[in-house]
Image 1 (cartoon, rainbow, N blue to C red):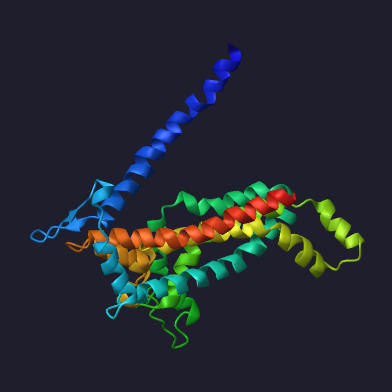
Image 2: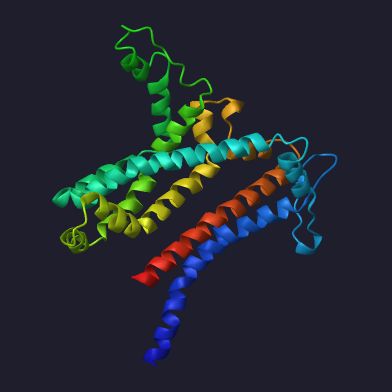
Length: 298
């Protein structure tokens, strides 16, 4: 009797989670599919979802693909720009995050908890408020220009908020770099100090220990950090809107947001969203393979 009750206990406890996923993930995703494969009302220019999969049509996908790869490819520029921004921001975030995570894991000692709290503290403030703080800092008469010009002594004044790509990239890095630090710290903190000492005893230099022991064992953390940073960056539109507001720096998120607000183009927005999900599925698959291989080796 006890075994039978235990057999049904864990499935029963999992029911709320499955219900939550079905209500807030599966059903909305199916709605997006129905809109993407639906039609557009020719008179009122509203989307008509096709709830029956047998009635799905590929008209909206064809229009979207034509606007990416066809002669009228004005969707291509934001997509290319997004990939450039995200790759640049992810690489710089990794360069910034790795020394911080390595110091916290190896040298912070009893202060690890304090350092981690300071790293997580920005999450306590909303993303909008942090970006608005950047707007105040980067204004023409803001603190950044004041520091660069040494308080007005030098004739240096940068208009950071006038559609500059590097301003958007800096905003992405600032907004998402904590997502890179925490997985790296978790991976580096699991490396046993005895392994590093054994490598040094075998004659390896400090650089060789870092290259042959630390880096290979931190690959799962690097992959997790890059994935956690790249995924929200790909759909980000708020950063570009606040720190630039120029169509010259618009990203895929801005394109999808603008397409949704345009009458008759909700189906194209849903098609764009599905294409982004397909592209992001590739790094997620590579990450799961990397984690599976590391667990097999260990």
